[in-house]
Image 1: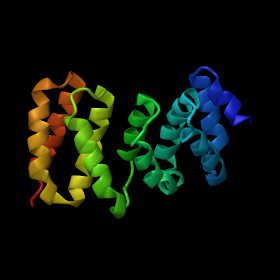
Image 2: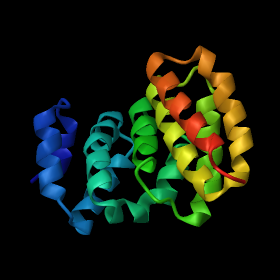
Image 3: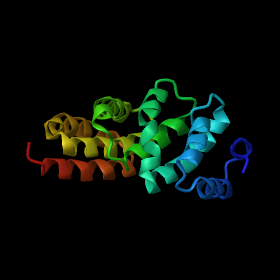
Image 4: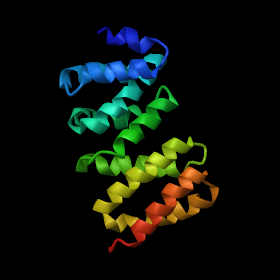
Length: 173
């Protein structure tokens, strides 16, 4: 399969599924896909981000070697899809301890930023919640942010926030 050529085509479910099938559980093929995800070409990185999320959810071990680079990549993302799909991936993962702080801070900023797309903010809720489960001392500042964001959120964001707030309040510090 010529992965580069497929990623330059118009995005489609057929192409996404073909890429997912091609990569499967192969670390070597995931490396190939991730090289396109980190490329400077807008269409290529955007198109690589979609199948990457499905592969990361199914084969979490494939994405772990790229977590630090994914976080650094968000300093200068080429497209909103890169941000959205990176944060989407993080919500499914057990993030390594050395990256929990930087990822928590980034997602905290995304949630607090009313100009961010709703999907980025909603996925950030899940990432923040998961990290806070490991560090309950963070719950008060997170609940405060979530309660500030709630009145201004979309219905989907409000739903995620409401569930997260209720569950966070149950956690003992």
